[in-house]
Length: 222
Picture (spheres, rainbow, N blue to C red):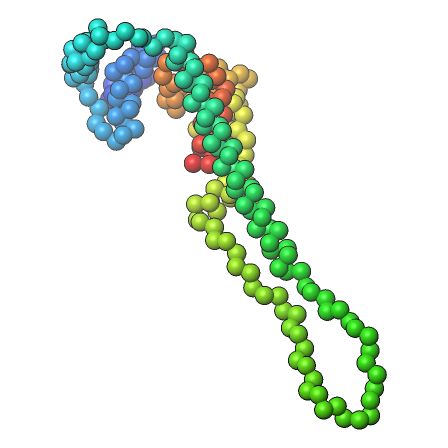
């Protein structure tokens, strides 16, 4: 049984060789080109591009005084995840407040008004010369409702129908066949082998569970 790499159009005799190839920079580059709907390049062309980039960046590397440390990378990743979470929560709360206000306006306009009954007027045999007043209309006036954009309405429906996906559940398998694993690491290993989910610079990732939770929210909300 042969093992293939669709991104690089290669075949491998066994699984270890295939895994080693998928960890290479060449495979990662072709994977990004595939996502961008670009054709794959050969390993020789890739190596030429790397050598050319190294020559162009060499003067900058020598003149640069400050280098990015592992601590800086972890801090930047953590701040990016926190910012994305805050934006999602703020957008969800704004939509909930907006729809809450719309429901209150609808309840107020649909309540029927009851006419107050005054004391009964005495019966007079003589004909009154005054013209009877026209009865007031109890029909509620139309209240203009704020327009909701199609994008906001679609997002509100997604929020109402969202389903929480645990971090130990595969994000790619169909809903009827979703696989659940005992640990997050087993789930990540499955999504890497079966679906090609690759996390760059994984050793610097400080919150894998937060990343999978965010990807699950993006998959549900778009």
